[in-house]
Image (cartoon, rainbow, N blue to C red; front, side, top):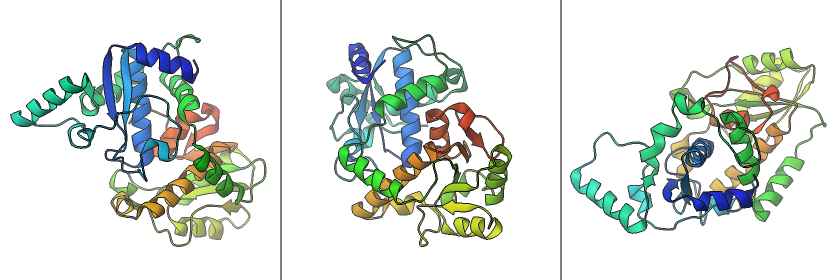
Length: 307
């Protein structure tokens, strides 16, 4: 199934979900969940529509600031407040009535939070997905097909990502590492750089690494403890760890620069012979869906799964 076929199939469905991308989390947290929602909609014959007008990664317009469009989008501002990411524990009656009126007036069947627990469930992860031109696929293979269709930079982003990628001096064959720092410790204990590097050395004798991280101290640590290895990075010496709340406060041009750097790092990691990261980190989860399974490895030794 190519993008044209996807659009035709998606637009043939009678029920509609409007997915609020960029409502709360970091970019890859938002994107990964969007992929799961798209698969759920294909499985259950629900038309997938996107809302990104006030996405937290928006520079001007949202998704198209960086990517080419792949489905219909809505610009209705009410999604900013009514179309939440997470299911509500308790919704006052007047708010329920407002949401019901809004959905009816816009011919919407589902908002993001109403399907959130469905497409993130372990049971959903065990299902298969039928595309018009393939036998049934498991979730990983189906997600890879969607990424191949929709991960298309717009011309400006493509040029900027290429320029950043070309600034890194790497041989044809190298290993990729993604090591998170910053506010990730709130969700899960952080691992030492040595755990990633030793895992990489157990997989390959290659000595050149692209190291994607949000904390330059990790680059310095790797270079200090492994002087016989070469570590290239797009991380700047000023970076001390990504904190999402602080990122959201940055001026748009700086956020734009950071996101371009992130996308260039992702492309360099995706082109590595082996990627070593963690699946609890959303870039690692994304690459687990994008890359061939034999190239993707967790420093913890676990396998890819929905959270």
